[in-house]
Picture 1 (spheres, rainbow over the protein chains, first blue to last red):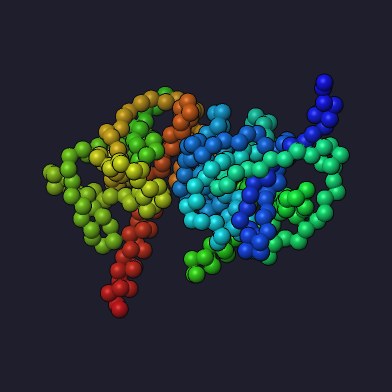
Picture 2 (cartoon, chains in turn yellow, green):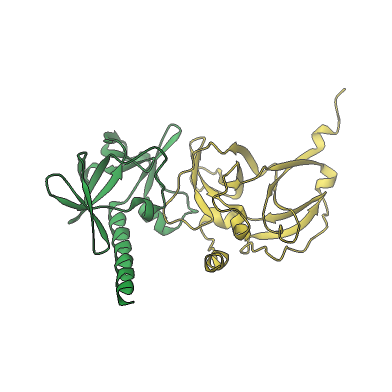
Length: 183
Length: 153
């Protein structure tokens, strides 16, 4: 028998962050199924780009396209909690809201994850919200990229806008990195 | 079509225009440190400044590999040696096949890495020899400054 509700389920992806761990909270960066292109394993070759900012780890080659690789955890201020040189377990390739002028395709970013990307489904009705807003964890510093903090089911999620990164107009404030070095 | 030289540096394939490639050194060489710079002395007595690739680009040398050749580049009146694995090779590419870095990367990265060649499922990075020399000079200046400060103490 066909499940009539199957077409109404929307999948969401949650990339775990280390911010909030000091306060005993588990946070994740939320992506919708429309944003996520694919999840690739750690065996994908990462090409490090010289003199790139600390949150840009390099680029990967997927389907003949060079995609910048972003350390979302570091971008959110999780660098001090994250183990140095923690291996990348998964890479989430997302499409942003910006398009390439020549091809018209959506520009992509690859988000690294040292844990496992969580997925869950919501019905169309539940996905429409509203979701209870939350206070940002004190250690969070999204550098102005955050859109909001929400409780989605049992998950604490932050929504972020990465368009400025893919366009090259984002300026990273390395305050946490400087403090880490001083410590 | 233009000729380029492919060299494996720190486990990554990189390309340079053939005009900037002076020679490939494959015989044993000795290293000398002077004034914050490291010099490569060939068996014939010639010296070339060695580029601290691992320090400059933050590309660690892959495990179980050691550079067994040196690629000597010439830019204007300067030469620079890059440690590479294997002898490298010359090939011809179409000029329009080089792609720029994505816009997410800053101007400095674009200057050092002006283009990439996608060859199947592998990317070959084009490095700018002029920028390599400039960055090597900067490292030498900082090393020299540190040495002077240490001597003053």
